[in-house]
Image 1: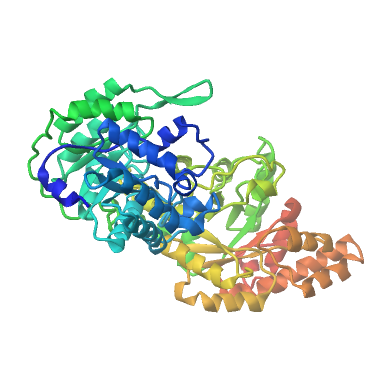
Image 2: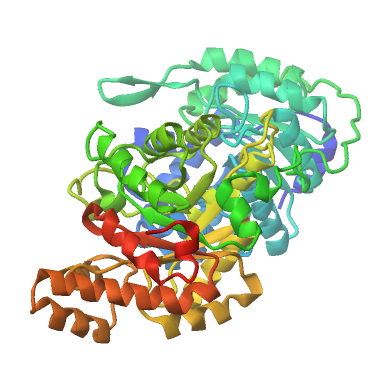
Length: 624
């Protein structure tokens, strides 16, 4: 087998093949099938594509395994065939390459977010990359090409996984947008420094954009690393013509940029999406007469490009972030009432409710974000109206359902400018729970990832670890469910939330005190201030609905029976029993928590206020 490390030391420029997916599509493979599975189902077709690129002059063949990891294959029911698919992909390319050409085992991103912006741990991600890399090595790959990554944290795990799998060289390639930066805001210089630190043998860029933007980014990378560079651009940005995405950059155009890329110092050049054997042939013609530009040896700055362990700006001290934060820091019990945003554009109703609460001495109002996946006024607008009109602090729920990462950042920066400070970060109810089941959900990240994001903003950093100029000052809250069906899983997620930067937590409505106290004992090692939520039941029917149709709420049989018996005596008797149950809850748990939140069922704030009469110091607070 050929020795790729000898090729690295040769100093010449070398040609990587073009897009496999584009060529398979051109040969009649539908876009909705698992292209990686073709290594097992239609190996001759994959072999023909590799052969076409060899005929065009490619020296390095990428395997048909870009999506061959366990996560992506699971979307096609193929998760248990990771090894078979990757081993076959490498073997097919090995057969075509023979003893003269090189086989690069292609490894793409997992297709899910990993920590700190997703639920998949770094160890889990590394294990999945290792699994794929081991099979590629067994199938005959000479090297690994890790490509099309946007997240430096994820590509780090891919590199580590490859190193654990086999002693083969690694080409590590990120992808940038039209502004030259990754989706996480990392610029080309930062990319080069970080990949250099991580021990890649070759660093570069591929996909997403055409040769022009790739060239500019490569020129910036060349200034900060002495490692060999690679560049595999798309055939320009796709245009939609008659419902199809068409890549417009011609083979001649690509050939011109091949010369420019090599002159900029690129050692390994090829094509990504939209490129064909015709593009490769045109590039090969150019490459024969070229040698890479000699680049000065660069000594990378140690630690450059790494997400700083220190904040860009010193965070605002927690007690100074909001009145709620100060009260909790001072050991005062915080009281809040949950009220819903308006169904329409008129804020009159929520303002009337908030005025009653303020007059009664409640410390804050808690406003959900599209609860039960129903259309209501935006939570940040609702909270801003209440705070601006009344000066009463709000705790704004903020969920991940409706916004992508960019939209979340925009919202949160706007919330900071509007003066909102108390956040309760939740993943959010899926749309199918509401009246618009056909609407789509985003869930770019979950509540753990969003907590990390907000902590970064509080340190003056964007998701890529880049300074944003001024820090936000949010008091970061998260949800927790002491009555979860799987308490161990809930505790693990709570540990992750605390590690991500949560400063307080609000529970789901509580109905079982012993279960809640047991939960508090189990989270003592990661204890943060807890605001206990209490829902005063208005009827037996209301109790049944919560128990059977609201995820995360468990109303025990004893309380259901109390509500059934009382409700049989009439509406007022049912409400009185619900209020009595809620007061019992508050009386027993107040000494164990840092706050009490009471829901206002059906908008009945006077009913909700009655719950606080069970507090030891409610009368001294001015509560009526």
